Image (cartoon, rainbow, N blue to C red):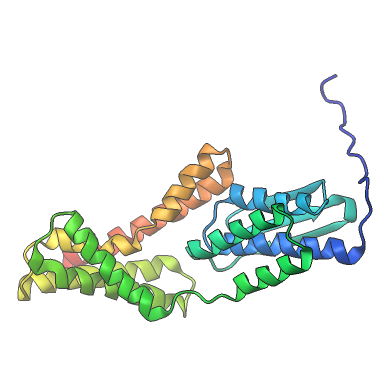
Length: 261
């Protein structure tokens, strides 16, 4: 009969409180690291549920949005909500948690899993200077991809590196990403115009397009599409809106410079 209440049976085995809390700790912190570093919500939910199930904890429930994780072990009256305030795109940590999940599925003992999780958590992000340098290198690579001139290489490097420097630098003092991306794009537009008007630059549009590529939310756009395809409509819409705001910020920054020049 449709509409009948589904009765969830009690667990066959009863684990100690310490064991259950350790499993809870591993699962929710694995999800937190994944969400903070750019993983998809369906990947987070699946990873957390698999970790709990591997250690014998069934009937766990996970709900993830881009800013919140709600995790419950219903049979043991454990529920916690975790708010995520800072997010980045560190796919190295995402890969590390995925590998940890596979090792847990292969029989990794509980205490070793906790130690490895804490090692992943304490791993440092890439140094600031490397992020800035990478921005410049990405600018050069995209300049060549868009068939730019050799004389525009310096402009693309300065624009790409400077844009990342401004964006990442401002993010250390404010959480308003729209404004950090706006001012980074504003700088790139200024660099492009100055380099072409007073330097050896020849193709302003190519320099600007190549320089803004480190700011483009490629991972965010890809994840938004994948979330929508997997049926996670809320997460997909939120990530799509965030990517759209970033695109508006970049366009507004560059457009303002062109309007005033």
